[in-house]
Image 1 (spheres, rainbow, N blue to C red):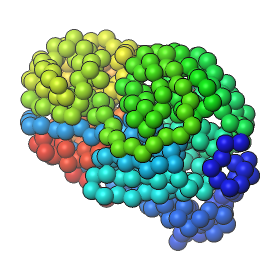
Image 2 (cartoon, rainbow, N blue to C red):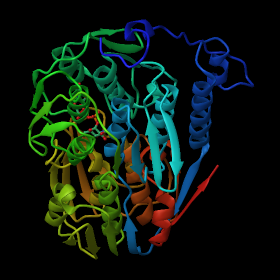
Image 3 (cartoon, helix red, strand yellow):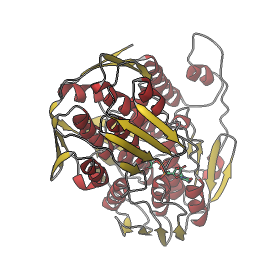
Image 4 (cartoon, protein in one colour):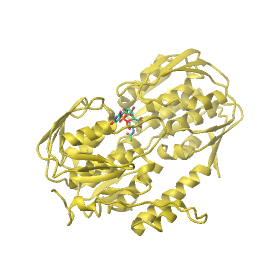
Length: 472
Ligand code: UD1
Protein backbone atom coordinates (compact mmCIF):
# COMPACT_ATOMS: atom_id res chain seq x y z
CA UNK A 1 0.00 0.00 0.00
CA UNK A 2 1.26 3.44 -0.90
CA UNK A 3 1.16 5.25 2.42
CA UNK A 4 3.25 8.08 3.81
CA UNK A 5 2.05 7.50 7.36
CA UNK A 6 3.49 4.88 9.61
CA UNK A 7 0.42 2.72 10.10
CA UNK A 8 -1.80 1.26 7.40
CA UNK A 9 -4.39 3.54 5.84
CA UNK A 10 -6.88 0.76 6.53
CA UNK A 11 -6.37 1.06 10.26
CA UNK A 12 -7.10 4.76 10.17
CA UNK A 13 -10.58 4.24 8.77
CA UNK A 14 -12.22 4.21 12.12
CA UNK A 15 -15.56 5.42 13.34
CA UNK A 16 -15.91 8.62 15.29
CA UNK A 17 -19.38 8.68 16.84
CA UNK A 18 -21.20 11.97 17.19
CA UNK A 19 -23.48 12.61 20.12
CA UNK A 20 -25.56 15.75 20.08
CA UNK A 21 -26.17 17.23 23.48
CA UNK A 22 -29.29 19.13 24.37
CA UNK A 23 -27.26 21.21 26.83
CA UNK A 24 -28.35 24.78 26.23
CA UNK A 25 -25.11 26.60 27.03
CA UNK A 26 -22.92 24.63 24.60
CA UNK A 27 -22.95 24.72 20.82
CA UNK A 28 -23.71 21.28 19.32
CA UNK A 29 -20.06 21.17 18.26
CA UNK A 30 -18.76 21.58 21.81
CA UNK A 31 -21.40 19.25 23.16
CA UNK A 32 -20.46 16.57 20.65
CA UNK A 33 -16.83 17.04 21.58
CA UNK A 34 -17.59 15.88 25.11
CA UNK A 35 -18.14 12.40 23.75
CA UNK A 36 -16.12 11.84 20.63
CA UNK A 37 -12.44 11.40 20.02
CA UNK A 38 -11.57 14.36 17.82
CA UNK A 39 -8.47 16.43 18.50
CA UNK A 40 -8.75 19.77 20.25
CA UNK A 41 -7.70 21.55 17.01
CA UNK A 42 -10.48 19.82 15.12
CA UNK A 43 -13.03 20.80 17.75
CA UNK A 44 -11.75 24.38 17.79
CA UNK A 45 -11.97 24.64 13.99
CA UNK A 46 -15.46 23.20 13.87
CA UNK A 47 -16.52 25.44 16.70
CA UNK A 48 -15.10 28.53 14.93
CA UNK A 49 -16.97 27.70 11.73
CA UNK A 50 -20.13 26.83 13.66
CA UNK A 51 -20.08 30.26 15.33
CA UNK A 52 -19.45 31.91 11.95
CA UNK A 53 -22.42 30.05 10.47
CA UNK A 54 -24.72 30.93 13.38
CA UNK A 55 -23.72 34.57 12.97
CA UNK A 56 -24.49 34.34 9.24
CA UNK A 57 -27.87 32.83 10.05
CA UNK A 58 -28.87 35.72 12.25
CA UNK A 59 -27.50 38.40 9.93
CA UNK A 60 -29.56 40.20 7.32
CA UNK A 61 -28.68 42.52 4.51
CA UNK A 62 -30.54 45.71 3.76
CA UNK A 63 -30.38 47.00 0.18
CA UNK A 64 -31.79 50.35 -0.90
CA UNK A 65 -32.88 51.09 -4.42
CA UNK A 66 -29.77 52.18 -6.33
CA UNK A 67 -30.25 54.99 -8.81
CA UNK A 68 -27.05 54.11 -10.66
CA UNK A 69 -23.87 52.12 -10.19
CA UNK A 70 -20.58 53.35 -11.57
CA UNK A 71 -16.89 52.62 -11.55
CA UNK A 72 -14.80 49.46 -11.53
CA UNK A 73 -15.01 46.19 -9.64
CA UNK A 74 -12.29 43.54 -9.51
CA UNK A 75 -13.43 39.96 -9.17
CA UNK A 76 -11.72 37.56 -6.75
CA UNK A 77 -10.06 34.24 -7.55
CA UNK A 78 -12.79 31.74 -8.44
CA UNK A 79 -14.41 29.82 -5.58
CA UNK A 80 -14.98 26.83 -7.82
CA UNK A 81 -11.34 26.79 -8.88
CA UNK A 82 -9.98 27.33 -5.37
CA UNK A 83 -12.00 24.49 -3.79
CA UNK A 84 -10.48 21.63 -5.83
CA UNK A 85 -7.07 23.30 -5.66
CA UNK A 86 -7.33 23.37 -1.86
CA UNK A 87 -8.34 19.70 -1.84
CA UNK A 88 -5.38 18.92 -4.11
CA UNK A 89 -2.85 20.18 -1.54
CA UNK A 90 -3.32 16.76 0.09
CA UNK A 91 -1.55 15.20 -2.92
CA UNK A 92 1.81 16.79 -2.21
CA UNK A 93 4.37 16.34 0.56
CA UNK A 94 5.93 19.64 -0.54
CA UNK A 95 4.64 23.15 0.36
CA UNK A 96 1.88 24.66 -1.75
CA UNK A 97 1.63 28.47 -1.78
CA UNK A 98 -1.75 29.87 -2.84
CA UNK A 99 -2.11 33.57 -3.55
CA UNK A 100 -5.21 35.58 -2.68
CA UNK A 101 -7.56 32.95 -1.30
CA UNK A 102 -10.95 34.71 -1.30
CA UNK A 103 -12.59 35.44 2.05
CA UNK A 104 -15.48 32.96 1.69
CA UNK A 105 -17.21 30.63 4.11
CA UNK A 106 -16.52 27.65 1.83
CA UNK A 107 -12.77 28.45 1.86
CA UNK A 108 -12.63 28.79 5.65
CA UNK A 109 -14.53 25.52 6.05
CA UNK A 110 -12.34 23.54 3.63
CA UNK A 111 -9.15 24.95 5.14
CA UNK A 112 -10.40 23.92 8.61
CA UNK A 113 -11.11 20.42 7.30
CA UNK A 114 -7.55 20.21 5.94
CA UNK A 115 -6.13 21.44 9.25
CA UNK A 116 -8.13 18.76 11.06
CA UNK A 117 -6.42 16.19 8.88
CA UNK A 118 -2.96 17.43 9.77
CA UNK A 119 -2.25 19.96 7.01
CA UNK A 120 -0.23 22.86 8.43
CA UNK A 121 -1.53 26.21 7.23
CA UNK A 122 0.29 29.53 7.54
CA UNK A 123 -0.36 32.93 6.03
CA UNK A 124 2.01 35.72 5.04
CA UNK A 125 0.51 38.73 3.30
CA UNK A 126 -1.62 37.53 0.40
CA UNK A 127 -0.02 34.08 0.33
CA UNK A 128 -1.28 31.07 2.28
CA UNK A 129 1.07 28.10 2.55
CA UNK A 130 -0.13 24.53 2.98
CA UNK A 131 2.16 21.78 4.19
CA UNK A 132 0.56 18.33 3.91
CA UNK A 133 3.81 16.42 4.53
CA UNK A 134 2.47 14.90 7.76
CA UNK A 135 -1.14 13.90 7.33
CA UNK A 136 -2.43 12.47 10.59
CA UNK A 137 -5.56 10.78 9.24
CA UNK A 138 -7.24 9.85 5.99
CA UNK A 139 -10.67 10.54 7.39
CA UNK A 140 -12.41 13.82 6.62
CA UNK A 141 -15.20 13.67 9.10
CA UNK A 142 -15.36 16.97 10.97
CA UNK A 143 -18.78 18.55 11.33
CA UNK A 144 -17.78 20.88 8.51
CA UNK A 145 -17.52 18.16 5.87
CA UNK A 146 -21.22 17.44 5.88
CA UNK A 147 -21.93 21.18 5.57
CA UNK A 148 -20.32 21.58 2.16
CA UNK A 149 -20.71 19.62 -1.06
CA UNK A 150 -17.19 20.39 -2.27
CA UNK A 151 -15.66 18.47 0.64
CA UNK A 152 -16.31 15.34 -1.49
CA UNK A 153 -13.31 16.56 -3.51
CA UNK A 154 -11.06 15.35 -0.70
CA UNK A 155 -11.70 11.69 -1.48
CA UNK A 156 -9.84 11.70 -4.82
CA UNK A 157 -6.64 13.23 -3.38
CA UNK A 158 -6.79 10.88 -0.35
CA UNK A 159 -7.07 7.85 -2.61
CA UNK A 160 -4.27 9.18 -4.80
CA UNK A 161 -1.86 9.96 -1.99
CA UNK A 162 -2.66 7.25 0.60
CA UNK A 163 -4.65 4.62 -1.30
CA UNK A 164 -7.60 4.95 1.10
CA UNK A 165 -9.85 7.61 2.53
CA UNK A 166 -13.19 8.35 4.03
CA UNK A 167 -15.37 11.47 3.83
CA UNK A 168 -18.57 12.28 5.64
CA UNK A 169 -21.48 12.55 3.21
CA UNK A 170 -21.32 16.05 1.79
CA UNK A 171 -23.98 18.75 2.01
CA UNK A 172 -24.01 22.19 0.31
CA UNK A 173 -26.76 24.16 -1.42
CA UNK A 174 -30.23 22.56 -1.26
CA UNK A 175 -30.59 22.65 -5.05
CA UNK A 176 -31.53 19.02 -5.56
CA UNK A 177 -30.16 15.51 -5.24
CA UNK A 178 -26.44 15.62 -5.82
CA UNK A 179 -25.21 12.06 -6.10
CA UNK A 180 -21.53 11.05 -6.37
CA UNK A 181 -22.04 7.94 -8.50
CA UNK A 182 -19.88 9.21 -11.37
CA UNK A 183 -16.99 10.06 -9.01
CA UNK A 184 -17.23 6.67 -7.31
CA UNK A 185 -17.43 4.66 -10.53
CA UNK A 186 -14.23 6.39 -11.64
CA UNK A 187 -12.46 5.57 -8.36
CA UNK A 188 -13.53 1.93 -8.73
CA UNK A 189 -12.07 1.82 -12.22
CA UNK A 190 -8.81 3.11 -10.76
CA UNK A 191 -8.82 0.13 -8.38
CA UNK A 192 -10.53 1.40 -5.22
CA UNK A 193 -13.21 -0.55 -3.39
CA UNK A 194 -15.97 1.84 -2.44
CA UNK A 195 -18.32 1.33 0.47
CA UNK A 196 -21.00 3.56 1.96
CA UNK A 197 -22.18 3.99 5.52
CA UNK A 198 -25.32 5.93 6.37
CA UNK A 199 -23.24 9.09 6.78
CA UNK A 200 -19.94 8.45 4.98
CA UNK A 201 -18.31 7.11 1.83
CA UNK A 202 -14.96 5.37 1.88
CA UNK A 203 -12.53 4.03 -0.66
CA UNK A 204 -9.81 1.47 -0.03
CA UNK A 205 -7.13 0.20 -2.39
CA UNK A 206 -3.65 -1.21 -2.45
CA UNK A 207 -2.64 1.75 -4.63
CA UNK A 208 -4.45 3.11 -7.69
CA UNK A 209 -3.66 2.09 -11.28
CA UNK A 210 -4.47 4.06 -14.42
CA UNK A 211 -7.64 3.21 -16.36
CA UNK A 212 -9.74 4.44 -19.29
CA UNK A 213 -12.73 6.16 -17.71
CA UNK A 214 -15.72 7.43 -19.64
CA UNK A 215 -17.99 9.71 -17.63
CA UNK A 216 -21.72 9.13 -18.15
CA UNK A 217 -22.21 12.93 -17.77
CA UNK A 218 -19.54 15.67 -17.86
CA UNK A 219 -19.75 16.25 -14.10
CA UNK A 220 -17.47 19.05 -12.92
CA UNK A 221 -16.77 17.48 -9.53
CA UNK A 222 -16.27 13.96 -10.91
CA UNK A 223 -13.81 15.19 -13.56
CA UNK A 224 -11.82 17.01 -10.87
CA UNK A 225 -11.96 14.25 -8.28
CA UNK A 226 -10.92 11.49 -10.69
CA UNK A 227 -8.18 13.70 -12.19
CA UNK A 228 -6.75 14.32 -8.71
CA UNK A 229 -6.92 10.62 -7.82
CA UNK A 230 -5.13 9.68 -11.06
CA UNK A 231 -2.21 12.13 -10.75
CA UNK A 232 -0.21 9.77 -8.48
CA UNK A 233 -1.69 6.50 -9.83
CA UNK A 234 0.50 3.92 -11.55
CA UNK A 235 0.35 4.27 -15.33
CA UNK A 236 -1.92 6.21 -17.67
CA UNK A 237 -5.51 7.30 -17.04
CA UNK A 238 -7.84 8.79 -19.61
CA UNK A 239 -11.04 10.63 -18.71
CA UNK A 240 -13.38 11.01 -21.65
CA UNK A 241 -16.58 13.07 -21.73
CA UNK A 242 -14.74 15.26 -19.20
CA UNK A 243 -16.31 18.55 -18.13
CA UNK A 244 -15.02 21.66 -19.93
CA UNK A 245 -15.58 24.30 -17.24
CA UNK A 246 -12.64 26.76 -17.01
CA UNK A 247 -12.08 25.69 -13.40
CA UNK A 248 -11.14 22.19 -14.63
CA UNK A 249 -8.40 23.70 -16.81
CA UNK A 250 -7.24 25.76 -13.85
CA UNK A 251 -6.98 22.70 -11.61
CA UNK A 252 -5.08 20.81 -14.34
CA UNK A 253 -2.73 23.79 -14.83
CA UNK A 254 -2.13 23.93 -11.07
CA UNK A 255 -1.40 20.18 -10.89
CA UNK A 256 0.89 20.36 -13.93
CA UNK A 257 2.78 23.24 -12.31
CA UNK A 258 3.35 20.86 -9.35
CA UNK A 259 4.79 18.23 -11.68
CA UNK A 260 1.69 16.26 -12.72
CA UNK A 261 1.49 15.10 -16.34
CA UNK A 262 -1.97 16.00 -17.57
CA UNK A 263 -2.55 16.58 -21.28
CA UNK A 264 -5.65 17.37 -23.31
CA UNK A 265 -6.40 20.31 -21.00
CA UNK A 266 -9.36 22.26 -22.40
CA UNK A 267 -10.76 19.23 -24.25
CA UNK A 268 -13.29 16.54 -23.32
CA UNK A 269 -10.54 13.91 -23.15
CA UNK A 270 -7.91 14.28 -20.46
CA UNK A 271 -4.86 12.04 -20.28
CA UNK A 272 -3.06 11.74 -16.96
CA UNK A 273 0.29 9.98 -16.84
CA UNK A 274 0.87 9.06 -13.19
CA UNK A 275 3.94 10.50 -11.45
CA UNK A 276 5.51 9.36 -8.19
CA UNK A 277 5.51 12.73 -6.42
CA UNK A 278 4.72 16.40 -6.80
CA UNK A 279 6.90 19.41 -6.03
CA UNK A 280 6.57 22.84 -4.38
CA UNK A 281 4.35 25.31 -6.20
CA UNK A 282 3.04 28.88 -6.03
CA UNK A 283 -0.29 29.48 -7.72
CA UNK A 284 -3.12 31.98 -8.12
CA UNK A 285 -6.49 30.76 -9.39
CA UNK A 286 -8.38 32.31 -12.32
CA UNK A 287 -10.88 35.13 -11.72
CA UNK A 288 -14.39 34.08 -10.68
CA UNK A 289 -16.57 34.02 -13.82
CA UNK A 290 -19.79 33.69 -11.79
CA UNK A 291 -18.91 36.69 -9.63
CA UNK A 292 -18.01 38.63 -12.80
CA UNK A 293 -21.34 37.73 -14.43
CA UNK A 294 -23.15 38.87 -11.26
CA UNK A 295 -21.56 42.36 -11.42
CA UNK A 296 -22.19 42.59 -15.17
CA UNK A 297 -25.86 41.85 -14.53
CA UNK A 298 -25.93 44.36 -11.64
CA UNK A 299 -24.78 47.05 -14.09
CA UNK A 300 -27.39 46.05 -16.68
CA UNK A 301 -30.19 45.96 -14.09
CA UNK A 302 -29.44 49.50 -13.01
CA UNK A 303 -28.71 50.86 -16.50
CA UNK A 304 -25.19 51.74 -15.45
CA UNK A 305 -21.71 51.88 -16.87
CA UNK A 306 -19.40 49.54 -14.94
CA UNK A 307 -16.02 47.89 -15.64
CA UNK A 308 -15.52 44.37 -14.33
CA UNK A 309 -11.83 43.51 -14.05
CA UNK A 310 -9.64 40.45 -13.40
CA UNK A 311 -11.78 38.21 -15.58
CA UNK A 312 -10.89 36.32 -18.74
CA UNK A 313 -13.82 37.28 -21.05
CA UNK A 314 -13.49 33.88 -22.76
CA UNK A 315 -14.64 32.26 -19.52
CA UNK A 316 -17.93 34.16 -19.58
CA UNK A 317 -18.51 34.01 -23.33
CA UNK A 318 -21.74 31.95 -22.91
CA UNK A 319 -23.12 34.64 -20.57
CA UNK A 320 -21.97 37.53 -22.78
CA UNK A 321 -23.62 35.90 -25.80
CA UNK A 322 -27.05 35.69 -24.11
CA UNK A 323 -26.73 39.22 -22.71
CA UNK A 324 -25.87 40.53 -26.19
CA UNK A 325 -28.92 38.66 -27.54
CA UNK A 326 -30.87 40.65 -24.94
CA UNK A 327 -29.43 43.84 -26.47
CA UNK A 328 -26.83 44.50 -23.78
CA UNK A 329 -24.03 46.86 -24.70
CA UNK A 330 -20.87 45.02 -23.64
CA UNK A 331 -17.27 45.78 -24.54
CA UNK A 332 -14.59 43.20 -23.95
CA UNK A 333 -10.85 43.66 -23.52
CA UNK A 334 -8.13 41.40 -22.16
CA UNK A 335 -9.08 40.65 -18.53
CA UNK A 336 -11.91 43.21 -18.55
CA UNK A 337 -15.58 43.54 -19.50
CA UNK A 338 -17.30 46.93 -19.68
CA UNK A 339 -21.07 47.25 -19.55
CA UNK A 340 -23.04 50.30 -20.71
CA UNK A 341 -26.61 51.49 -20.41
CA UNK A 342 -28.83 49.18 -22.51
CA UNK A 343 -32.53 48.73 -23.23
CA UNK A 344 -33.00 45.02 -22.71
CA UNK A 345 -35.33 42.64 -24.49
CA UNK A 346 -36.46 39.12 -23.63
CA UNK A 347 -34.52 35.94 -24.44
CA UNK A 348 -34.76 32.17 -24.18
CA UNK A 349 -32.03 30.35 -22.29
CA UNK A 350 -31.24 26.75 -21.42
CA UNK A 351 -28.63 25.97 -18.74
CA UNK A 352 -26.06 23.43 -19.91
CA UNK A 353 -22.55 22.22 -19.07
CA UNK A 354 -19.81 24.60 -20.27
CA UNK A 355 -19.66 26.08 -22.91
CA UNK A 356 -23.43 26.27 -22.44
CA UNK A 357 -25.10 28.88 -20.25
CA UNK A 358 -23.98 28.23 -16.63
CA UNK A 359 -26.58 27.12 -14.09
CA UNK A 360 -24.68 29.25 -11.55
CA UNK A 361 -25.84 32.42 -13.38
CA UNK A 362 -29.44 31.25 -13.91
CA UNK A 363 -30.92 32.97 -10.84
CA UNK A 364 -29.11 36.27 -11.56
CA UNK A 365 -30.24 36.19 -15.20
CA UNK A 366 -33.81 35.60 -14.08
CA UNK A 367 -33.62 38.71 -11.92
CA UNK A 368 -32.41 40.63 -14.98
CA UNK A 369 -35.19 39.23 -17.14
CA UNK A 370 -37.79 40.75 -14.81
CA UNK A 371 -36.51 44.09 -16.15
CA UNK A 372 -36.32 43.15 -19.87
CA UNK A 373 -39.10 43.90 -22.36
CA UNK A 374 -41.16 40.84 -23.31
CA UNK A 375 -41.52 37.18 -22.39
CA UNK A 376 -38.29 35.37 -21.45
CA UNK A 377 -37.80 31.70 -20.77
CA UNK A 378 -35.22 29.84 -18.71
CA UNK A 379 -34.95 26.06 -18.79
CA UNK A 380 -32.84 24.59 -15.98
CA UNK A 381 -31.35 21.25 -17.01
CA UNK A 382 -28.44 20.82 -14.56
CA UNK A 383 -30.09 20.83 -11.12
CA UNK A 384 -33.57 19.60 -10.31
CA UNK A 385 -34.44 22.12 -7.60
CA UNK A 386 -32.92 25.38 -8.72
CA UNK A 387 -35.99 27.63 -8.95
CA UNK A 388 -36.39 28.28 -5.22
CA UNK A 389 -35.62 31.98 -5.76
CA UNK A 390 -38.75 32.34 -7.94
CA UNK A 391 -41.08 32.54 -4.95
CA UNK A 392 -39.00 35.39 -3.50
CA UNK A 393 -38.75 37.26 -6.80
CA UNK A 394 -42.54 36.97 -7.12
CA UNK A 395 -42.91 38.33 -3.60
CA UNK A 396 -41.09 41.43 -4.86
CA UNK A 397 -43.54 41.76 -7.76
CA UNK A 398 -41.94 39.69 -10.55
CA UNK A 399 -44.23 38.00 -13.07
CA UNK A 400 -42.83 34.45 -13.26
CA UNK A 401 -44.48 31.09 -13.92
CA UNK A 402 -42.87 27.68 -13.64
CA UNK A 403 -43.81 24.74 -15.78
CA UNK A 404 -41.58 21.74 -15.02
CA UNK A 405 -37.99 22.69 -15.79
CA UNK A 406 -38.96 25.96 -17.50
CA UNK A 407 -39.65 29.35 -15.97
CA UNK A 408 -41.40 32.06 -18.01
CA UNK A 409 -40.61 35.61 -17.00
CA UNK A 410 -42.68 38.53 -18.28
CA UNK A 411 -41.09 41.97 -18.03
CA UNK A 412 -40.46 44.67 -17.32
CA UNK A 413 -42.11 44.65 -13.91
CA UNK A 414 -41.54 47.21 -11.19
CA UNK A 415 -40.16 45.46 -8.09
CA UNK A 416 -40.85 46.43 -4.48
CA UNK A 417 -38.57 46.01 -1.46
CA UNK A 418 -39.89 43.16 0.75
CA UNK A 419 -38.35 40.75 3.27
CA UNK A 420 -36.90 37.89 1.19
CA UNK A 421 -34.69 34.90 1.90
CA UNK A 422 -31.55 33.55 0.25
CA UNK A 423 -32.53 30.00 -0.64
CA UNK A 424 -29.12 29.01 -2.01
CA UNK A 425 -25.82 30.65 -2.94
CA UNK A 426 -26.68 32.02 -6.40
CA UNK A 427 -30.26 32.79 -5.38
CA UNK A 428 -28.75 35.15 -2.82
CA UNK A 429 -27.16 37.15 -5.64
CA UNK A 430 -30.51 37.27 -7.46
CA UNK A 431 -32.05 38.80 -4.33
CA UNK A 432 -29.36 41.49 -4.11
CA UNK A 433 -29.66 42.29 -7.83
CA UNK A 434 -33.44 42.59 -7.65
CA UNK A 435 -33.15 44.73 -4.53
CA UNK A 436 -30.96 47.21 -6.43
CA UNK A 437 -33.95 48.15 -8.61
CA UNK A 438 -36.77 47.51 -6.13
CA UNK A 439 -38.65 50.47 -4.71
CA UNK A 440 -37.70 51.15 -1.09
CA UNK A 441 -35.61 48.85 1.07
CA UNK A 442 -35.26 45.08 0.66
CA UNK A 443 -34.38 42.98 3.68
CA UNK A 444 -32.49 39.81 2.71
CA UNK A 445 -32.29 36.96 5.21
CA UNK A 446 -30.13 33.84 5.46
CA UNK A 447 -27.13 35.63 4.01
CA UNK A 448 -24.89 32.75 5.12
CA UNK A 449 -25.63 31.28 1.68
CA UNK A 450 -24.17 34.42 0.09
CA UNK A 451 -21.11 34.30 2.33
CA UNK A 452 -20.28 30.86 0.90
CA UNK A 453 -19.40 32.29 -2.48
CA UNK A 454 -19.31 36.11 -2.76
CA UNK A 455 -16.09 37.72 -1.56
CA UNK A 456 -16.95 41.03 0.20
CA UNK A 457 -20.07 41.58 -1.86
CA UNK A 458 -21.31 44.45 0.30
CA UNK A 459 -17.98 46.28 0.05
CA UNK A 460 -17.69 45.75 -3.70
CA UNK A 461 -21.30 46.77 -4.36
CA UNK A 462 -20.81 49.73 -2.03
CA UNK A 463 -17.76 50.90 -4.01
CA UNK A 464 -19.95 50.83 -7.13
CA UNK A 465 -22.42 53.15 -5.37
CA UNK A 466 -25.00 50.69 -4.02
CA UNK A 467 -26.47 51.25 -0.58
CA UNK A 468 -26.12 47.90 1.11
CA UNK A 469 -25.51 47.14 4.77
CA UNK A 470 -25.48 44.14 7.10
CA UNK A 471 -27.34 43.97 10.38
CA UNK A 472 -27.53 41.30 13.07
C1 UD1 B 1 -19.98 22.29 -9.71
C2 UD1 B 1 -19.91 23.65 -9.10
C3 UD1 B 1 -21.31 24.25 -8.99
C4 UD1 B 1 -21.99 24.23 -10.34
C5 UD1 B 1 -21.95 22.84 -10.95
C6 UD1 B 1 -22.47 22.80 -12.39
C7 UD1 B 1 -17.98 23.50 -7.68
C8 UD1 B 1 -17.44 23.46 -6.29
N1 UD1 B 1 -19.31 23.56 -7.79
O1 UD1 B 1 -20.76 21.49 -8.83
O2 UD1 B 1 -21.18 25.60 -8.53
O3 UD1 B 1 -23.34 24.62 -10.19
O4 UD1 B 1 -20.58 22.36 -11.00
O5 UD1 B 1 -21.78 23.69 -13.20
O6 UD1 B 1 -17.25 23.54 -8.63
N2 UD1 B 1 -24.25 14.36 -10.90
C9 UD1 B 1 -24.60 13.02 -10.80
N3 UD1 B 1 -23.67 12.14 -10.33
C10 UD1 B 1 -22.41 12.54 -9.97
C11 UD1 B 1 -22.05 13.90 -10.11
C12 UD1 B 1 -23.00 14.79 -10.57
O7 UD1 B 1 -25.74 12.65 -11.10
O8 UD1 B 1 -21.60 11.69 -9.56
C13 UD1 B 1 -25.27 15.33 -11.37
C14 UD1 B 1 -25.61 16.34 -10.26
O9 UD1 B 1 -26.60 15.82 -9.41
C15 UD1 B 1 -26.08 17.53 -11.05
C16 UD1 B 1 -25.23 17.46 -12.33
O10 UD1 B 1 -24.72 16.14 -12.40
O11 UD1 B 1 -27.43 17.39 -11.37
C17 UD1 B 1 -24.08 18.44 -12.35
O12 UD1 B 1 -23.23 18.18 -11.25
P1 UD1 B 1 -21.67 18.50 -11.28
O13 UD1 B 1 -21.26 18.94 -12.65
O14 UD1 B 1 -20.97 17.35 -10.68
O15 UD1 B 1 -21.60 19.73 -10.30
P2 UD1 B 1 -20.74 19.89 -8.98
O16 UD1 B 1 -19.35 19.46 -9.23
O17 UD1 B 1 -21.47 19.36 -7.82
